[in-house]
Image 1 (cartoon, one colour):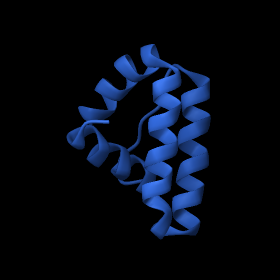
Image 2 (cartoon, rainbow, N blue to C red):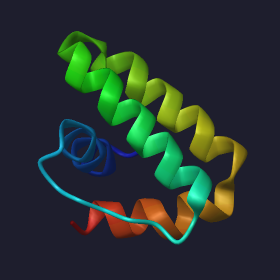
Image 3 (cartoon, rainbow, N blue to C red):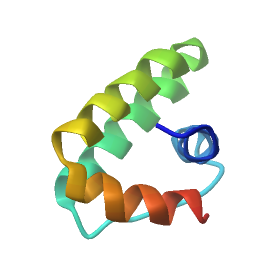
Length: 72
């Protein structure tokens, strides 16, 4: 994941910005990771890694949604 996109994903997971995808699986992943970060802010690195793994499994989601998240 590019550094500028990772910064935006971190903001998304902290709840500083809001994003809703048309992809239900991505929305569920975001929600799950937001809850985890809210419970333990020290787990951001592992959450970013999990999000990166998810996006690598679904490159079309990564291409469209990650670009949209980066523009937030």
